[in-house]
Length: 304
Image 1 (tube, rainbow, N blue to C red):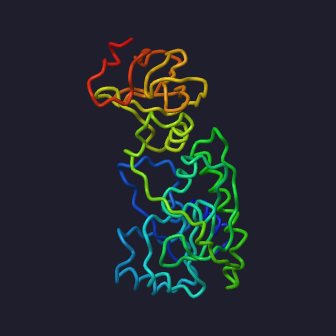
Image 2: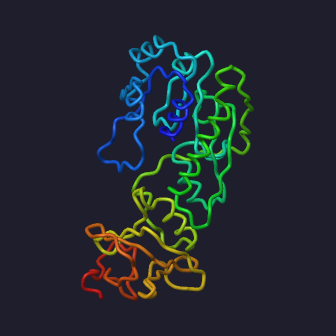
Image 3: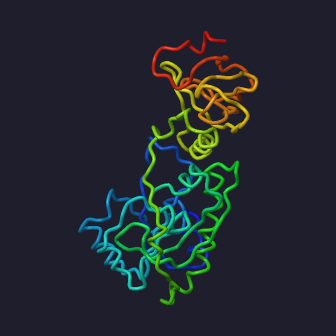
């Protein structure tokens, strides 16, 4: 999101006085393009402070005399003192159709909740996150088999189009805006890798939504068998089975019972192994095994 929107501003010849971004986290899988690299390629000063909300950085930003401030998926909250600096306003690009899905990782949450649409929203920044007046937004579909990454690509493309539609009006100081409807607002927090744990008592469709919401490049949905962790990178819901939740029903295809229906596992990976297709039959699971148990279970290497 940051890369595409910055590229759009560079492409139209906007004078960008500085870019503030984040240092790469060595524990994070970096799958997105680098905002810092793009900025440096165009001789734009780049800063990566742990916090911009300090007296030193507030004064530095004030000295730059920016007319507009844009936030494109900047990960930290920006204090009101900074938001008040640019005379033409501060604007944020958010990956949902606000006021729905305020907060963190909105695309992942929308996929997890089985939504059929989401979008990108450009809005004015206020003290409360994602609560300012809407300038423009564009809807994108969420297909029933889409992963979060596929949806995010559509949202990113929509975000660039929204920015390109409104940049002239923003620079002229007459951008349209309308208040958000608080009656339909929703907020979701950040997600941790542990939130990918599968609850087999849930319906198969809900579990599938989790799988596609956190599959590559995200940390993944997982379950345990004894002391071993099994990641499920892709699966398909089936409605024609009744079985104990978490019980392996068959190996070809690899199918597991859920609270409603069953889940056909397509791609999986033991934590200490390589990702593989379930159809290869080398995963070590067998009919009758109970997934999701915390007590001793047959070791998958000996349960063929």
